Image (cartoon, rainbow, N blue to C red; front, side, top):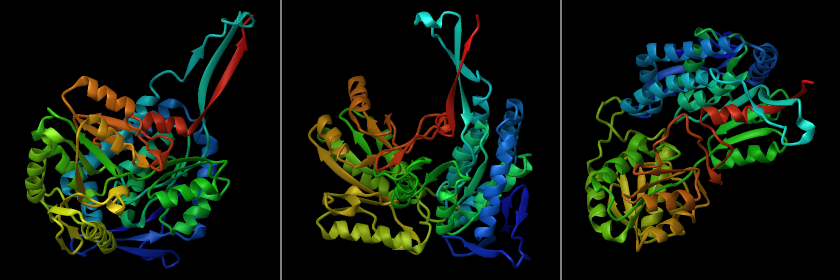
Length: 477
């Protein structure tokens, strides 16, 4: 397959177009050729910015029913073409097919959720007659689109992470330039084509695969009014520093934790933790990296986690049973292997895994990981988890809060008071009770604290990020 850039409602960079560069996508599982794609230079990026700026002038004033209809058509078309979207995703990024199927389903749901935003009131009324001057005065607050959005997305969830930027932006009346990772170019450009074929007006959604320096240049461009970035901390915070006066939304990484309290259902803990830690080779921003266990359950949990880690289905992402597939490329596998070796050299105990073959690192569980090691305090973004034991609930909370950033945290407990205490005390973007932090619902606010992010996604929250409130105060008498 070959995928082209989308600019102003037209496709550029076909297989015979020698004026635009081409990239090659190979499977991280077996290095087989998956397809080719067009690569933008600055002239194509510049044209995409122009198209988005021009389209914004009309799209911002489009009636709600047009936006709702278009968003619904994208959702319907995603469901209709689910099989081909799933195949592309599984082959290109090595996502296990069951996970790919789930991502496509969420892609459709995300566009439907964005459409739902437009079926309620357009604004809200504020009473002002608490002040004598407010007698006979009405005040209404509505939200207005800020302008073109530069959506920068990573490889790991190329459909739904893009949808979390594109769908609420379109609902708000903003236009979009999508700059996806070249590691997921085929999936991302296929999504752009699907949106186009669903009837998206020219220039409202544009998609360009380009080098990072061109994406940075685009972010600095005055035609871009909002930058929504999902990716590494280093790149995200650099963008924030470069753009102190521009709206920036950052969804970054985190080494997520799960706290297991006395009395927790260990069957559920083990099953959910193994899936949450090793599913999709741990290439998830909210993948379980640290298991914190209260002492009374620690021995049994440790034994059961070791057995489940060793039994975790690993290998070919096209196999329906696979949980842990390949890492995206050799460099990623090298990094994971290096971090594990560093921890073991520093005194950590290897409980399970540690084996590597090609881009596949088998699910790995360690204990007694040195606090100074990278595995203890940074995001490994691979199929590795650590195990630690604590005297009580309070000690686990203190340890979890030592993290310099967090997006979500899981807590397994049968006690409502502990669940509430975790919600109040854990310094994180969300607390997930009796499940792992990998559980995410697309309507719920999503984002990190500390170094893990700035701003919030989740469809309604992203809509807020892409709009500004405006008050309308009217004296009726």
